[in-house]
Length: 223
Image (tube, rainbow, N blue to C red; front, side):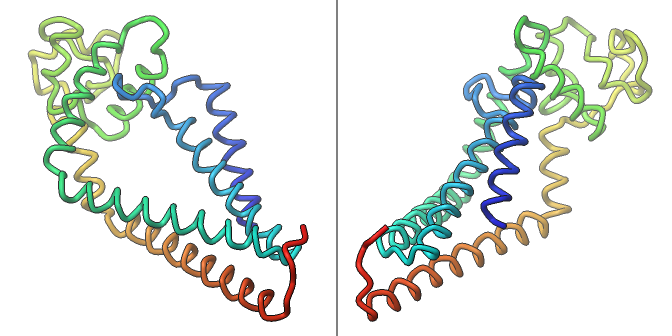
C-alpha cells in the first residue's frame, strides 16, 4: 500500500508538471522548487524505498533489507538535521525567504512565468493577503498604487489600479498570513511528522527483525 501511495504521488506530480507547468513556483532562486517537482521527488523516494522493503521481505534477501534500513536511516537523519538547522537559523531563513519572494514578484508579468502568476493570484485570493510583507511590495513591480486584482477585497477587472485607497485591498502580507495559518494549525504538520517518524521507525525495526531471523536460519543473499 505504501508503494501504491508512492506511485500515486508520482502520477500526480507528473500530471501537475505536464498540465500546470511551473505551477506554485514562488522562488526565483530555486525555480525547480515547484509543487509538481516536490510531489514527484516525494513520490519517487516513497516508491523506491517501499520497493526495497517489499522485495527484500518477499525474497528474504538480506542485502535488500539492509539497503531498506540504510535508506530509511539516511532519510530520518536528513529530516532531523534539516529540522535542527531550521530552528537554529529560523530568523535568517525567514528573512531570506521574504527577500527571495520579493525578488520573485518581479517575474509576475514576465513571459514563461504563468505558473508563478497563477500561484500568487490563488494564494492572495484564498488567504486574503497582498504582497509578501504588505501590498506595497507590488509598487516597484506593477507601478505606483497598482496591485494585482486578486488583492482587492471585492475582485473586479482593474480593481487593483487604485490601491492608494487601502480600504479596497487586503493590507496584510501573504508571508504573515501563511505563518499565522501554520501557527493556528501547527497540530497538522506535527501529526504528519509524528506519523512519518513512527512509520520510519517501524520500517527500520521490521527490516532489522527480519534480517536477524534470516541470518539465524542461514539464508544466503540469493535474490
